[in-house]
Length: 31
Image (cartoon, rainbow, N blue to C red; front, side, top):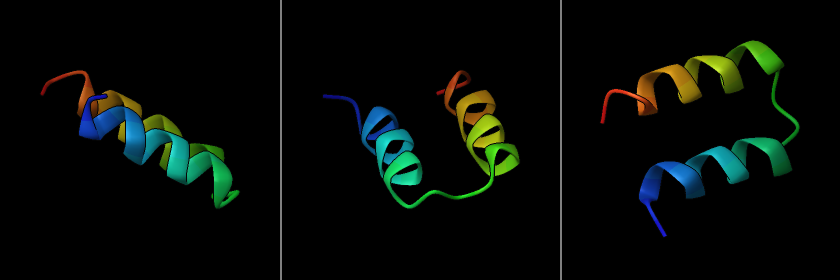
């Protein structure tokens, strides 16, 4: 499992703002 995917799921579980989640997804797309 890629670290980025784990970070994304942790953000979802933490119920952070959708903006932060979208930013993390956008950033991860470059990794």
